[in-house]
Length: 155
Picture (cartoon, rainbow, N blue to C red):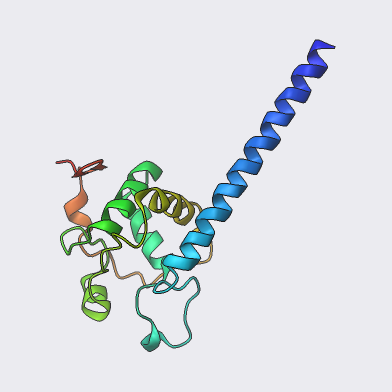
């Protein structure tokens, strides 16, 4: 009888945890769609001349190349979205030439929303079939040995 109760309780906890994870993913996806997809496509556009920002697949691929640890990637996304700068940019320099520097999202999205979105981006993109353009990473070298922390980047 005790084992049956333990198994039922464990199963219930697992189901509730799964529901919460799915709810968080759904909320993050909705925030992403409302606030990020205004500029970042989730598919490769047919006409690249009409896009306003790099696709999220390319952005996510670069972030994961520079920050393979999820927590570091999430801290980078949150920091960069609020306080973007050319020194922090990890994209190829020609992307900034083409699209400009990402405008600060301060006042548009909260840090809590950004954390949820960053987690969603990390878990969802770039996807298994995305290869990108294989042109290297712009400022990737400047992040060697530097990990983002709560205040920015540590040396």
